[in-house]
Image (cartoon, rainbow, N blue to C red):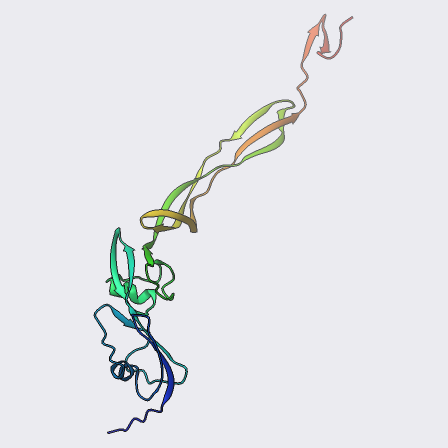
Length: 219
């Protein structure tokens, strides 16, 4: 067996009725309460675990447990908790959270009387969509066609790609969507418009047995 030695420490005890007792005492928080005839009721809370050894300057407080509201999954419940963190209040209300969920106030915050705690459920869903790839229109020149003419020498064809998105929902509402990857499944084909640069052909005709160009004037 082991022997535990407690040293007298100067401590302050504040009870639920507002009385403050300053004393020198050796022992644990629980011993201090018992020595001062403080009986904890069901709704009472102490700011230190009862087994905590007293130390100089410690201020032990006994208060009525805080009443807080916890809202999660579409319902609100009232819970009474002591000197705890928001995460502890959630546990007391039977509400579990994962690393993606949003807890307000933060789970590490100290609980205060009348605090309203909300949990927003966050889910991330992956989806893949097939999307069109627009074709480009390209202009070219060619002497194979007469100057001043334009022709579509290649028809444009749309391509396609598969795009994977990461969708973030908060309480079932889409709040963010980001493309995380894409893969081309069909390349687009350019539409080509060709402008002619070729010279116009010269034709000839015979007048009075002579050959004249369409560019000359017969006499």
